[in-house]
Length: 287
Image (cartoon, rainbow, N blue to C red):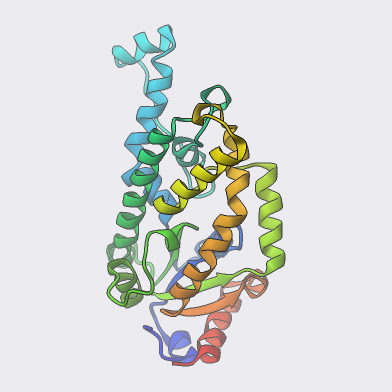
């Protein structure tokens, strides 16, 4: 780890922290807190994915739909209108919409082969965005003058790294430049995330082998052809299992850094409290 103790971290003139864990446990809330207080550059991996690496895919998908409308088609063909996504740190809907859900097109689904293609695009984009992190650390300091750096990762980071491999290129690059911090949720958090997801299923990224097995199982259980699957029902079917499958992968990543609980993260309501929490976690975990 780049900090040997809590004292080392507190004394550092350039704090570099990466937070990972399930979506909904406070990564972006803490990142916004630090950015808002000043001195911290907020690097959002999802934002980077949705702009630099998948922005063209997203915009082209919008245009594809617009081309179905004669008036919009005419305007697009004459460069009379411009279509782009308005993705922000707090509104990643364009990325989620593009990733989509597999199943019945009449219910907003996309064919499974197309869904797999978009999943692979996301995997490549996420890896690239993570490997951009060291460059953005330098950029934040040299160009903007930010002394501190917070990396707000996607919940799916554990799906695109192999943390058990000491030579994993993404884990190696990240651990050499930042302190990796797992925000670990409890069983109560897990149940709340499942309830929240059931109310409004959202597109997710899955490891290819996990997705293929899940899809095959769902089709067999429902005795349905792929183009008749309710997209939201499929996502609900797999969400709890996805969370469960990610836990050991997050835990393996935590071996490269430190762990804090979601309750501790929620109590860090100022930058000073955040720094103290990280320092205490470093000392608690030891070298």
